[in-house]
Image (cartoon, rainbow, N blue to C red):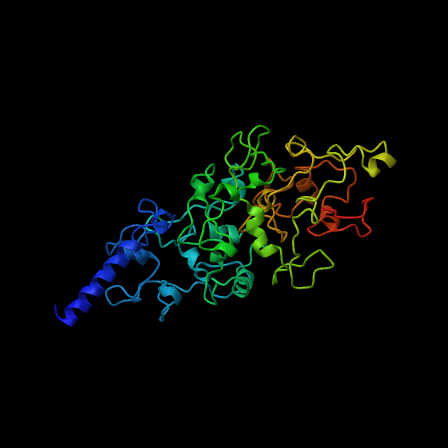
Length: 413
């Protein structure tokens, strides 16, 4: 055999080998690569590309039959994508062209053959709430001024995580698009998780049993919407967190540090301007984390109650007053927060539904100002009151008694 034929045979064999690798494995198990439910862009489907094919997101030659398909930027995009990953806009609201993912994850103008991809807020998908203020990711980011700022995510991730590049999409800080699955359709099965920890980008997070909230002995899932018998994330009787990814470890990959922000002002006076407060969820940190509680769940041993016997003691309510979490419950970040954007205008991404109930005083199309007292009363009764918007004055991540009403010296959140 001649040398050139040997070389040609080697190239063909290598190409076929790579082709086989590309058509099997984790990507074809993912939400984007699945042959039944995967991505299918209208322009590429018209050319005969099947669902899940790489060409629905990547245009290796930036053209179809010699023409660059819409959206035509006039120049190649990084990673051979059909559009740039992120526009670099520093604040929302966002438009479709700001983020590559919004071309499909939007209710209007989606480039998918099937049209819009439905992704409701966490309170709906996993909390059981039956009224959705948004039905897609773009819409959730634009519900109010309370959202994960994509510019902040991008600039933090590229300086922190080795896999993240200058041109990377902010969404990939939390999601690996080649691995992410459709957890929304399988809320009771965390092996269908859509997230990857920033410190472990090449693996899904929550699919293994050692990556669940059940690893916190003092975790109890909150009630599902309208129930005191069934629990998140699927409205079943399972309450130990075995169906919930360990969101604490996931979120703290970033939030254990002071994250730069263009959007929010921290309430913590010890946090520098332009940064979010670093969260300590350990036994030396916040009480809603692993720190031991101060008083009994009914508050009967509280100094406030002992010095004011006519004042009803503040208490913890179900399901957090029950064994085995009664001694010291630990919350998941998503028990209180939305991951993408919140209906409320506060900057904390607070959920509309907490522990089975809707936060009072709210409701579309008005009432977007969070009633802090009612939010907290989804898990607490109180024995002192700073007014409907006074709780967060003294109670926030990293808060310590600094002259507030608490008769203790230590964490107040």
